[in-house]
Length: 74
Picture 1 (spheres, rainbow, N blue to C red):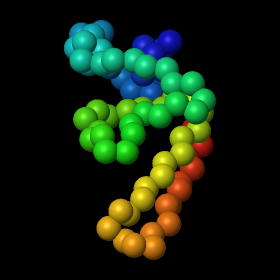
Picture 2 (cartoon, rainbow, N blue to C red; picture 1 turned 90 degrees about the vertical axis):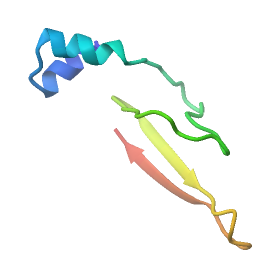
Picture 3 (tube, one colour; picture 1 turned 180 degrees about the vertical axis):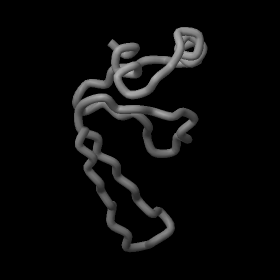
Picture 4 (cartoon, one colour; picture 1 turned 30 degrees about the vertical axis):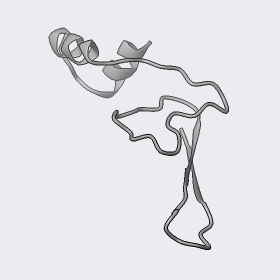
């Protein structure tokens, strides 16, 4: 499924695709699951094929800060 998805979007040789996939980890997140939590550092690049992602940022240095949300449909 992922290979077909990649091939539909870019022209890539089998060798290039194999090399890229060697360093890839595929994960599926169900509704309500967190990809990264407060206090954690993001050490990866992620791609979303289908679904909706909600991001929330909170500025802990502002005494009366409210959270900011963004919704990204895919």
